Amino acid sequence: QVQLVESGGGLVQAGGSLRLSCAASGRTFSSMGWFRQAPGKGREFVAAITGGPISTYYADSVKGRFTISRDNAKNLVYLQMNSLKPEDTANYYCAAHRSGSYDYTSSYVYWGQGTQVTVSS
Image 1 (cartoon, helix red, strand yellow):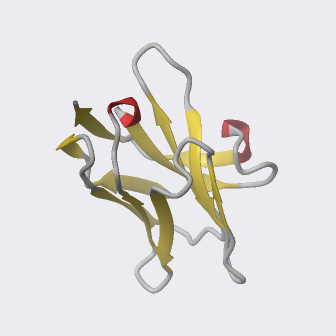
Image 2 (tube, rainbow, N blue to C red; image 1 turned 90 degrees about the vertical axis):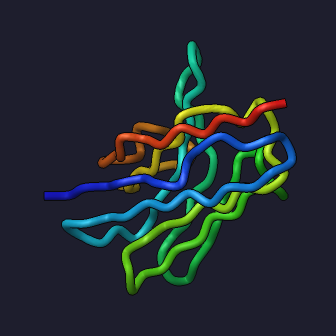
């Protein structure tokens, strides 16, 4: 049974940093992504990382501030978030990619339950 479990969310002041982790069990996925969903809004793409050779993709809104990485030995995917802004406040989800564009939710087959990130001004 495939399971994705996110951790690392919390409350941080604007300008601060957080690192989210996603632990995958049940199988290994070549490509993984992070999405976020703020109250009253749709789920939006944040970042994705492919298998070897590794490539990374980012939403314009987080480019230069967030970094996605992975530890294949531990089956973990990370999202390092720096220079956080109040508009980054959302529930963050990791997802396992199946096929298609990395920025589409329909391209992902498994999802975690999410971890809340709140950035205060």
